[in-house]
Length: 279
Image 1 (tube, rainbow, N blue to C red):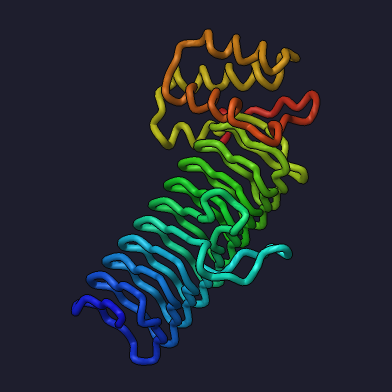
Image 2 (image 1 turned 120 degrees about the vertical axis):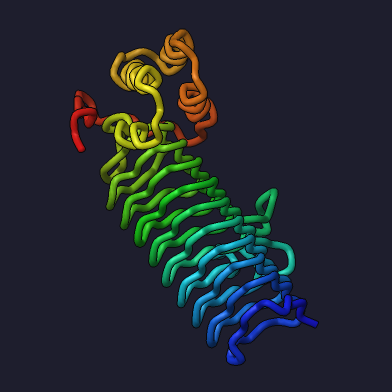
C-alpha cells in the first residue's frame, strides 16, 4: 500500500505505484506517473504529466516541472531491461524544468546509481545520462547534455546547447560556454568554450560573485597562467602552483588537475584572452 502523509495533495488522475513513499506537503499534479520503489520527500512539487519511472529517491522541496522524465533505465545498448538493481538519488531544493530527463545508473557501474545533489537548477530539455554525479548549486542551461559517468563539482555552470563527453569531469565554479563540446576535463574556476571546448581564461566574474577575496583570485589567475601558458610540464607546473599561498580554492584547482582522467581542456595555442575587465 502506498505510504502517503495526510498533508499531501495528489490529483486523482495521477498514477502511483503502491510501493511509493510520499512525504509531508507533497503536491502531485494531474496525469503524473510514479513507478515502483520511489520515495518523494517533504514539500516536493511534481507538476502535471511528469514521469518518475522507478528506483528513484527524491529529497525535500524539489520542483519537478511538466513532462520531465526521471528514473528511466540507462540508454546503453548492452544493458538489460532490469529495473531492480539500478538507482537515481536526487537531493533537496532542486529545480528540474520541462522536458528534462535523468536516467538511473547502469548495472555495469560500481554504484549503479546516478546522483544529483542539492540546490541545482536544471533548465528545460536537459539530459543527464546514467551514472552521472552532480554536486550542489550547479546550473545546467537549456538543452545541456551530459554523457554517462560525468562528474560536475559545486557551482559549475554548463551553457545552453553544450554537450559533455562521457567520463568527463567539470571542476568547481567552472563555466562551460554555450554551444560547446566538452571532450576533456575542465579545471576548477576556469572558463572553457568551443567545439571542442578549450580553456580561455579563469572564471573571474564567477569568483567575484562568490565574494572570493582578491588575493585568492589573483593566485588562481597565476595558477592558470603557470598551468596553461608557461610551457612547463604538468608536473612542474603543479609544483610551482603548490608554492603559491594556499587556500581552499587553490586546493580545489589543484585537485581538479590531479583527479583528471581524460586529460585537461588546454587552450588553443597563443590564446591570450582575459575576461577580468569584462562584465
